[in-house]
Length: 92
Image 1 (spheres, rainbow, N blue to C red):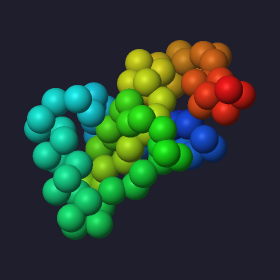
Image 2: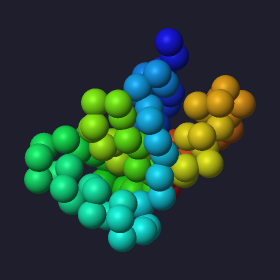
Image 3: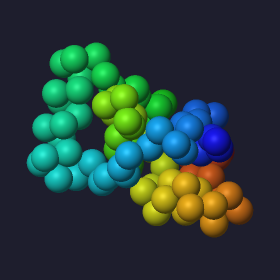
Image 4: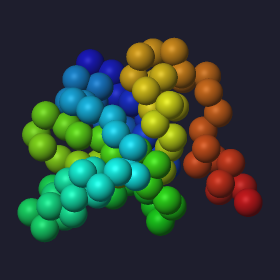
């Protein structure tokens, strides 16, 4: 069991992740809206733009400000050396 950094000090257990999705499509927007209505959304964006929607096996929907490619690389174990976008945003 590993924990994947999804930005701003937030982490998700890799075994619980079912899917990583882009927040731009209508079905994903609908999924997030329905999850908000049933209190299953975890907003880990810290006020930033949502770049990745993470679906877990418990049907929770996690919103992350880290790019989907970065989260995917971290999930596959190849991306821990990639710079954190949230650290760059915080310096601005």
